[in-house]
Length: 226
Image: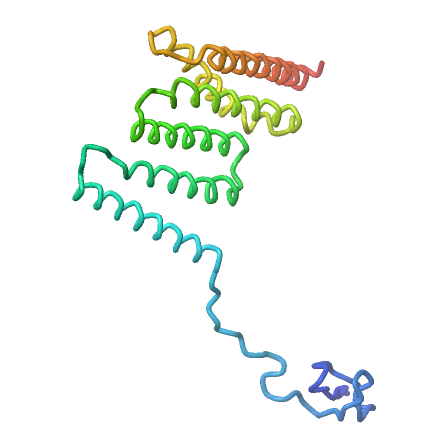
């Protein structure tokens, strides 16, 4: 014999037909659910990612600002590409927000991006301004030293991330020797900052060797059950 069930439209539950009122809310039960109670209508409201929308507007604004500056600089040309002084910090701000703060990249990728864009921005300022070379004599070795020191400290405190940041650490080592190479090539460099950058690269090489030896040892123990 088929067992009948009543339905509570308020609680959307079936109740034994021996009850006339819902034991949960006390309302009158019905013999069957109202229309669409079992299968409620699906909302067709389109999801809007406001975060992505804001970033798209900021990207458009960045493009418009830089384009206007380039156009004005060309039509009022006086021998100075002053648009670089506007474009460089604007692009750096975009990289800082999109590529660093809101990004989920490895720490090494973020630091590398910051180092390259900062150096490029200061070189743009130097080129537009005095063109005395302060950007590559002082700022470049300083930024490289700070970036390499940061990734070394970060990797030491987060040893599990060493493998993911190892490629970037190798790139930092190569970049850290650029001031020394420029000095040996006859390009004037701030001596203390050049030594600092070279020293930071040397420390990173030692860290890479230590990691490589530990990784090699662990692999040998795993393969040969040592």
